[in-house]
Amino acid sequence: MSMSTIEEAGDFFMSLLCAFGNWYNGSGFAEEHSRVLLGANISNQSQVELFASQWNVFLPERHSRLLQVCPILGFLAVGLATPLILVRVLAGVHLRQQTRFLLLANALLSDLLFLSVYMLSTCLNVGGVLMSDYACATLLLLLGALYMAGILSAKAMVLDTSLAVLAPLRYPALWPLSRTRGAIATIWLLSALFPAASVGAFLWYHATAPCSMHICSLPLVLVLTVSHSRLLQASMLLTVTGILVILLLVLSGYLVLCWQTRQTSIWKGECSSRARGTFLIHYLHLFLSFCPILLLVIELLLYCHYSVLDLRANLWISMVVCNVLLVLPKALAPYLYGLRYRDLSGALFALFRCKRTSTVSPEI
Image (cartoon, rainbow, N blue to C red; front, side, top):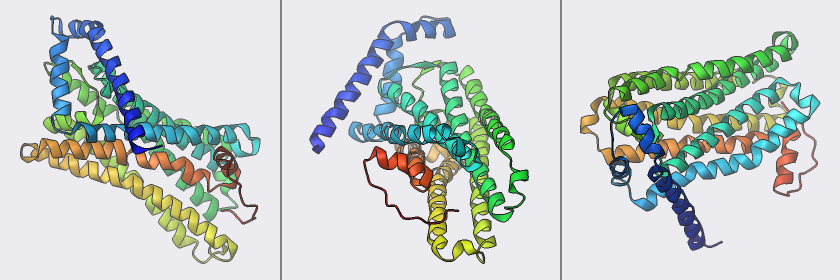
């Protein structure tokens, strides 16, 4: 397939989304919601023009569309592999009774849901669909909760691996299957509570603002809303710093695990190459997760001096961080981990119709 054909298909898809957005905004639904919230007759077309100008003025159309396609491509990549892995884990009795596979399935499920919601948000943004404050806050809360579920699942995975390697005899008593299910339930509970402060600050900020209908885009929220509200800056900075601390704890756990096992048989013989490969996958995934969070922390710190920042450069950074760097590790996760486990790689090899080698090697 030539590059021109791909561009034509992308333009056709974008035109469909824009047609849907024009139909929605012109159908009376957005205007009706606006009147209910504001108690006044506000021209919906003027709001569309306002936010369309804020979105398109600072970025070339071709580049912005390329960045907006990245979440859709990430969803397609995850949508191919993750359902197969989830079916393999949940359908296999011996797999769903192992903690590592349950935690991995939970992490992949959260990534799949996150990319699904983010792709939906991207499609609505491309179509120019306006959303109310509460609808946008619900969308942002879903994104934050699903992202946190993946981060906390990664933390649970390193705890499980540490217990299994450092205390193999006490591992069944310390981490039984019932405790694993309780840990997964706790992960989802904490994930729902963690971003609540930022979303609450978002609602408070827009309650005092004159406009209640807007394009609900995470990059635009960062540039046009967070950068002008000290309360939002503080709440998001605390939330993102908490995520960064969790990632640092996960990295520290794997480093300690390598240090504690350097003299054991894990790093000797045939098992050595597999152990190195497994830890290399963990480090690569953590590095890809570190980059956007660290850039987001720096961006939030710079917002304290937003008056001297270039809005165009700010929007570029936000779109790259949200649409590319946040999506990339989640799009690669099912392939990195799925191909590493022999019990899961068969489904992925069958998906791509590849023959798997029949070598037998130890697995940690």
